[in-house]
Length: 380
Image (cartoon, rainbow, N blue to C red):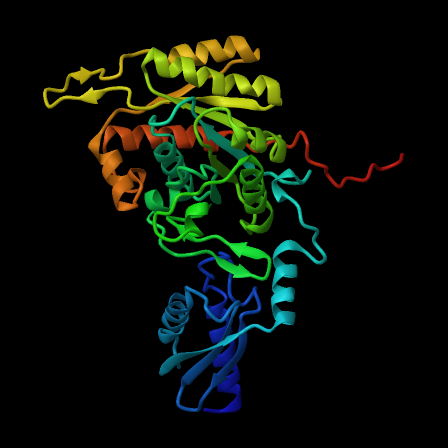
């Protein structure tokens, strides 16, 4: 192989590596400074030296496989192999500057004036209404539509997002920065990823606030279109902390059709009046059960979602819509048990309704009303 051929093949290899996406950071490994060196031998054997962020990177095998797959089909490449190394502290500092900007200060990026991330806090008045299932299905559906989506499992005591998303991987820590696991195209973080087994979390209010604050400050989500927060039921410490830490978050209220559930859910929605947040809408879950005959059995009554939307409209002073009614179906539960949200491949009525709600929320453009535009007026 001549020097010219070797250089040409190396250029082709580098271009192919530019399409290999880091599974946690969701950016090309070449852009992240992870490709330390490329060696091209005369027989077409290519060796790529890849730097991992930390020695115990849980996705090292995935990165190795993706690099080899990207190169093995290139004309002129006989074999492709990967040699793994670990970034130095200086290289990690450079990586953090690439991600957050040089000298970036700690803070909650979703509160920046230039942030266009829509934050949806999914709330309910009581437990057992399927709030977490609705959250992960809406997130997965939006990600399948091409949006960049994240979830913060803010239900510290009753965390369930990792199981519902099928996440068994622990987050990667790069110094003070935490890289969230990715499942079904959604970046997710939960206290359940930091506790052993099924251990309970017994924390008081200040610790809950600090945990949520750390998730929002230290977890690197990147530029998201939508961030979901799966809140615990009720109007307790976490709900108050969300209003303080993310004052621009919108509340998405989940209820069931029964009037008692709607009464309790109204309190969660009415909290927006005190916190100055906006209610994005109401979702009614477990609306009916379709029988083999095709008839609908309204197991939990009917009309609770519409009634809740009507009451909240009167309370907050603007129109609060009932965004959708999700039927009670085994497929929704089965998707949660398997860790694969039903919206990804289900043809059931629940999957279709969840996809429709997600599309309706995704179509609402991210506003520019509070964004500082760098425009200099021209003097005439």
